[in-house]
Length: 164
Image (cartoon, rainbow, N blue to C red):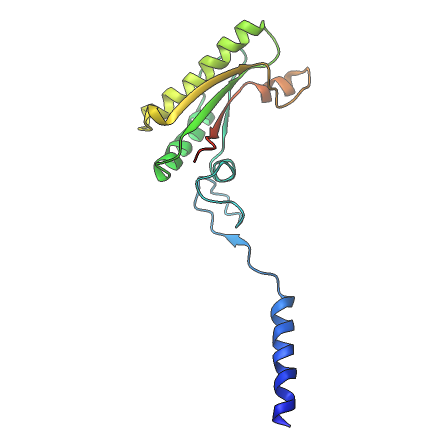
């Protein structure tokens, strides 16, 4: 009788183990203090990690490359993240909204990327780890033609280089 219960017990244990979902959460150790659990699919030191835990973009006022307090706070977190992942290099992409000439918007995007890069280097991030590029108005995140869309498009985005 004991022998016949053994396979049945083993099968019951196997089914019970399969019926519970695996724990896919990890502790949030990044800049986000909201306390939300993260999925384990976010690998440390990756673009997804930067976006999820720190924030990958800063925004600018119309016709400006001046960093406001919210932008500086995001870049502060990025500097801490970059210090944690010393082998990561990044490209900061400067963007503008559609208003202005192509040439002016490329120059404005360049100033925005340079402002973010300069701030990160002032916080101790080596300039050799940062590359900048301007896309001007060529890569809008929102294709709309109103202030809401333009505000989203006036940005600098930090992108982890794929060679990392």
